[in-house]
Length: 425
Image (cartoon, rainbow, N blue to C red):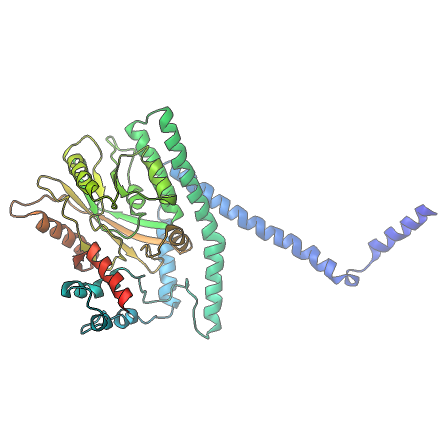
């Protein structure tokens, strides 16, 4: 009897039409499809990450593909992205001629510092692009703009960011492991540069760097100082990513930097185990003399890699080159200028956020960071030049190379002028 009852129930279940339970039939279709989409998404991300790391560890690259990707994004932005009004913020902040609202209401700065305000407002703000690059909310009534922005978010946050996050985790783990191993066994010069190269390239990949390095025959050699304009704390990794550890006599850079806490502090401490680093603590003025003395002394000898300096002292948005600090422009020092030019249409590399984490999140969710890095011929101080004239000549060389003005103010003056302006508004 029981067997007959079970047989009847089984027969009813097998012969029940799908329409009798439409929700069950829909879930049977949707769940496998969703699973396939998720699986495809995971496989895509892991394949890209795995291939990228394999190429980096082997000393290879993706070749022209990253530049083709960046070129495609630029074409889409310039072809579809609606034109945005340019320069309104600067005009509204008093960047034009005549008296600014700050001049009329605040007398705490000197006349010379007041003149620096427009330059400060221009250099220390996010870059204003001529076209909408799909990374900000469209703010229009056109539904197509909203669709494009939504698709942009899906690609950047759903695909690009997970790939870059894994690359960032790898680079941080690698530099930490390399630092620990250095306690057990000292590295040779080639091994040291290999570790630095793998870290710098994986970190740069995590930031979405697409860089073209020009005139490599002019790369800095020891003894000497490599001097570059400055957009972000990541510029060190971006320049170091072009170091070739396979050369017969490989050379990297002797890095200079400030003491930091947090992520940057961790990276610097681990990097100091595999690369020579000169630290500067700006809160202690007495250290400045020792810092400059050590840099000049190291640059005069051929015992270590050339020193990498950012003599502007501050990051800017690449619309100008600030005056350079003169302490390192000594007589008899070989100076190798490096000019960095970014194309901010795919992503702005300038660090304008107050802290580092919001900055790297913005960079990692951008399309890419497009850089052109120009190595310029070696320069030496002329007999007729003093430190000030030599530094001004290097500033002008870099500015001319990337097609921006040489600003007649230093970073400290500009930063002070901007803070006073904002306080007096």
